[in-house]
Length: 393
Image (cartoon, rainbow, N blue to C red; front, side):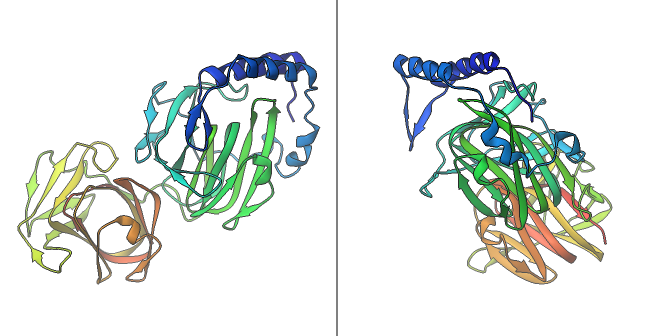
């Protein structure tokens, strides 16, 4: 375990305290308040009178291997491609290190959900992390690496309040990382280590081991950096990535037209409204407005469906989507479902295929289909899709 001198910890603690009191806002439930000068003086006296002893955290170290034994990264997020001080509100989906990050609501200790604060890209002040980091103020973020994981680690800086962790859809609310150290969440083993404790914050490493299908983390005063993952044996890069970059920007297609994308044939078919009526008078168009949260070109639907013919069958797929109104259609292996929100089909089985939303919230997200798929039809009234990641048998 890393240690620091009392002088260093004291000076660093004073610096962090000043930043916290005068640069950041403290949450008391939801309302913002600020500490005064007396709080600062009292805290400095407390720091001076305390011994920087990390023995209380030794039991946490027993559950996490030494840093040099942590697994090698197969993919990572370090936020170095982001813009300093950029702010994200709940419902925003952005890309960091070529992976999807979704900012979502925070859940307080009493179970109340809150969506009025932000996450921000900040300079790191951790001795173990350089460059930029993601700071949470009553928010959380879901991370999607393009497939299921067997392991994940990250560096965290915890400055107080409650924190959230969501693994495979199971939410746990906690105050100290020591509370989740050595626990199991949705079948995944959780380990936490405090590398550099202080009286202002705990800086450490969080590690998850097991079958990780989805992951999110956030807090009231929490920062994360250097996410590192290992893929499950059945996950990883797409066998075929249908990103629609082989289409023509601005092209408008109608009922009966065909698209050839990444070697697959996509046929445009009639759309079914919520009341069961159908229409073949809609349009599908190729745009570059990034409405699905991807990059380059995407496909937009206006009252039409796209039928993907996978012929010999595929073993699964995921896709980015942006849904901005009206109802939606999906049909898998001949089983049709008419719905209004993607959350309605999360966790369901259609045509023998399991559906999940590893990244969801607001208008954008990622839809994942797990199982043998011979045919897929999807469309909407105001729907965009991109980055259809296909897994072959």
